[in-house]
Amino acid sequence: MLKLLRADLSRCIINRFFIAAVVAYAVVGMMLPIEMCINNPNKLPIGAIGGASNIFSFNYRMLSIPIQGILIAISICINIGNEFRSGAIRNKLIIGHTRRNVYFSHLLTSMCAAMCFNIGYLITFLIVTLPICGTSGIDTTQILLTLICGSLMMLSYASIATFIAMSVKSKSASAIICSMLLFLAIFIIPIIVHKAYEGEYIIENIFDSAGNFLYSNKMPNPHLLSKSTREFLRLIADILPSGQSYRLGMGSSVSDAPRYWQMAVSSLGVIGVSAVSGIAIFSKRNLK
Amino acid sequence: MEYCLTTYNLSKKYKKLFALKDLTMSVPKGSIYGLIGKNGAGKTTLIRIICGLQLPSGGSYSLYGVPYTDKSISLIRSRMGAVVETPSLFDNMSASDNLKHQFTLLGKTSYDDISNLLETVSLANTGKQKVKNFSLGMKQRLGIAMALAGNPDFIVLDEPVNGLDPQGIVEIRELILSLNRNQNITFLISSHILEELSKLATHYGFMDGGAIVKEISAAELEQLYSKKITIVVDCSANLAPALDEVGLEYKLLADNRAEIYGDIQVSMLCNTLACHGINLLKVNESDENLEGYYINLLGGRGNA
Figure 1: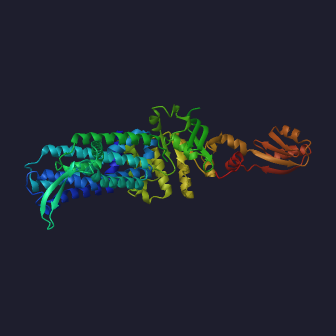
Figure 2: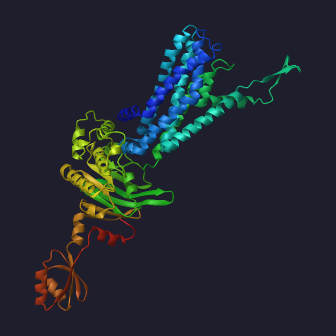
Figure 3: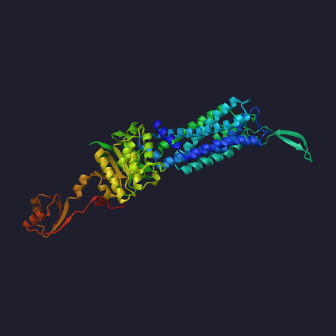
């Protein structure tokens, strides 16, 4: 197993796409806090209490959903796809490595790659954000929980991408499938979260003919889903990595704050299920 | 006799199609086993199965006497090397770096043997040249070097000379013969090029319809086809006593025609027949070879 892991990691670190993606992601992690501070000085005041925490949460949401998962998925798919194309996976089996070890080695390599993205982003983010916002008022617990959940979410992204790459075999096909699933999840998750956390009442503001505000009318939400359906949707949002990143980004901006422990357990569940399914499929697969 | 590989009623089914059906064969240790069969006979499927890339649908096989279902089969596989279809190489790396990667996979801590391996396959002067710039023959030789990295005593090669130029074919042949003779490495080779295989193989397995139709050693095959003549005489009456007198093994094909086996001195045969009043009208030396044997055996259907 260690032989495989050493060989796979040595291949991964010379993967040009991987290196470029880590660098690009780190640069984005550095640029966005600056951009946000410049464009939204009122919402995220420089030096304000909690500024760093808010930027951190917001960035995790903004960056995690559109960039992080896609980069990880494509990077993993290219790496594993190359292994299939070159016959490297075939070679590993021929010289006596078991399929389970081959799969695990790729999974761990993918997870290491995902953590490289995460750490690269965090380092550049902290380098830029802390001098601007300072450390006063930082909610350490929130940041720590966000970090743990975020890291687990990244690992679950890696696990899903490994599952798809090891099952589909063609690097272009697996990259397309991963990206499409991710885009689909990105577009569906806001709808799911919105439906799951919709209020029981809606406020209707009444204006006169001149457009002046008269009064507010509180009325039951006609589109409110049943409690069990909302709970189910919340569970989905917590299980799906894209849902988790969206929820993490919410911070305490909604009444129902992120359920960190549930997210962590969900991520571990996603990792476990995708790994076990991946091994089961890969073990029975006919390789050429 | 010790065997590197034995299969028993091995079968492989893809949906409704049997790629292998009750295949039974044995590869003796130290041999060069040539696997011959037309397209779709199941050669590559067999190789994929014994290399652990696919699982059989039925039957069994064992490597060095260890069944494939045994947990220790992975350990046994580490004594194997293989080049299945195309060599498993990273195009963007040099020959040396590819071997380093292979050494890492094998858990070797020292890279000292790499230069020897490159020397063995005549790639020592490739330096930092990337594999993508290699010729087909160079890639094939590097593939064999990769297979040799684990010091195997059993190597499986699927169509090793496919697409090679004549020089490349000679190089691969000499490499295989040298490894077999000097390091006693057993080879299982599938090839379409029967003439080339006949220069290498010590044993043959003829495949058709997913099964081994015939297993025969090169020595047995040589006995069968190379020492046989067919004679035609003018008088049939004394032919049998005359041939008995010479002491040769023969078979009468017709009144005036016979097949004679063994080392035959034609002049002596001619004299003996003349003594019995028989004139020798025609002598045909058998020109049958591996290809002829294959055609006779499998009825010449399809291509080898």
